[in-house]
Image (spheres, rainbow, N blue to C red):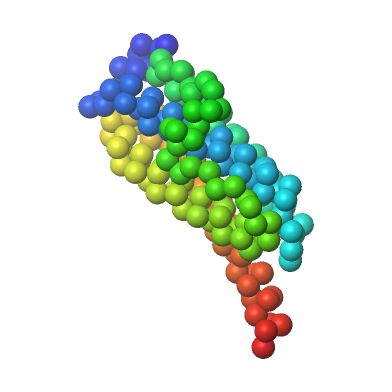
Length: 168
């Protein structure tokens, strides 16, 4: 643990930041798995485009988990070590894709991204002017989550528009 790196924290304890980051870390692993499994079971219109997007997002979520792990360790903490604890420590939880229709899957994924956006926005408010390194890291992740929501919503809207043309 780097002593000087921790000494830059102002008005917040490293342990508090570690706990918050661990919750986000759990979210990222659950999001990774959710995108991974959704990409395997998706069926319906524009399936290939949806699968490609989900696969890209899964890779991003895994990258986010890696980024969070690095910061947790820098602060002298330990990332959650057992997958069985991810659900109990998660902010956003996990929504199993029991309906393989691409619209249902996209709807679940959009809700997950919206939860992530809310979580990371709140985390930014907590660490603002107290932990600039974590603030920068979370800002990067938040930008990705906002982009993910937009990507998924665009796909959902395209499918809905296509379907509505045949209902008329």
